[in-house]
Length: 570
Image 1 (cartoon, rainbow, N blue to C red):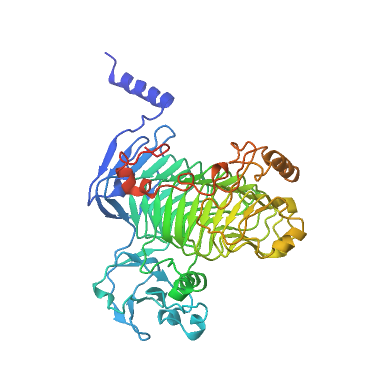
Image 2 (cartoon, rainbow, N blue to C red):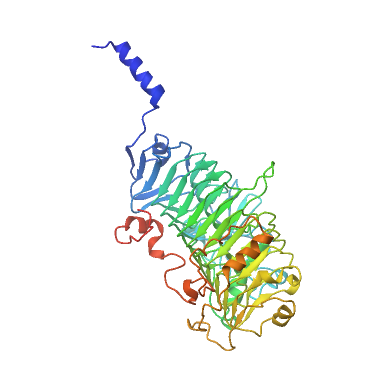
């Protein structure tokens, strides 16, 4: 029999040549126990399984799994992580305004929820806006901020809160979270899967930085300031089948014509964020992140903003967020915009998204774009008023917007000041009684063959004569006036009405040699009609864009046996 010393030597040799054995065990966390303690024990292949219950924690994950044996952080049905800090405020009435109360607090929080609902933060002109604004402030919107039912501010070591119905907040549940807090913070932790959890009451539901191969799936997030963020050097990672929303003390968007106060309500929410709040509360965001990330099949609704990618050049001139793929998301009722690609995207693909009733813009492309290409295709935009698509200044690199379908909207394409020679608007369907384009500064700056082959149902739009005179829209199909924008059979498309993709892509590649011979999303096009988002030139479709909300969020994961479909996360 081998000696004890010999056995130890053999074990050491195995560890040196084959590595430390992976995990593979389940680490249970029960109500009242610490998720952090369980996460700190996890090895590659382990699953931290969180039982039903509410856990008030800010979980920081620093351990990594492997590509073949990721660490899994999974919630059972009813598992929630709340990221707020314990605080017992002593409220007293403020010396100004009715229904305003104050409580001492040594540090400024980043988020406040009142009886579980999100309350807007005010960072400028606090006293005036807490008291419903001065005449100067009120003049900024038709509603005069009267639709902001509750607001809070931090001044001189005191937290001020205007309650929804002027009631004393002493009996209410007031949750505050520190700025930068996260329910789950993936801090350099690669090969980690987070799924099946409900995440509330923090600056972030999930925050990831310096990670590779991270998956956030089937989580329900909100209310939070920012839902899920990949921030700095996150590569080859996915956010999918999540539900991100921000239940608030007010409605983020109210439908209806101006005479029913719909417009003034929406502008109140928009302007208080732009002029008096911290702005830019994104549901899903990639900021200075890495390459080859995917955001897909998410349901985002009733919040300030949808999905944004934003990046800056690194010190060596390198650009982030390359090969980003954003697709099949359903985004509706946002107070600002649904999608915001950054113009510096390299091979970014934003496609097959369904965008409905987003107040300011469905898609806002931020400048500048010196590289590209950025592909935006097969999206469906339905909107009841306001700008539908806002292409901002200085798009120098190729930004190709094709095969999209627009319904309604006051202005379907807004080309800011026209300094956008890289913008291509081709084979889109503009269906509605109002204008397709706005701002004629692009005439003569964008080559005519880059705005063509579109379907337009209203020829009495702004710029129509100017565009025709400038050589634009040579092959546009302009339908008769007075058509019902809700009908799917507005015009009978034939193979002759669609663009000749072979000639078109060849012409674009002369101007942009880096473009592929076949544009993404057009592989199936073989000479037949194909204008707008839906295949075969159809102007309506059921399942080609967006995602079924029943497949998203923590509940969908726990009911997955009843909601399986092809491509769903198992």
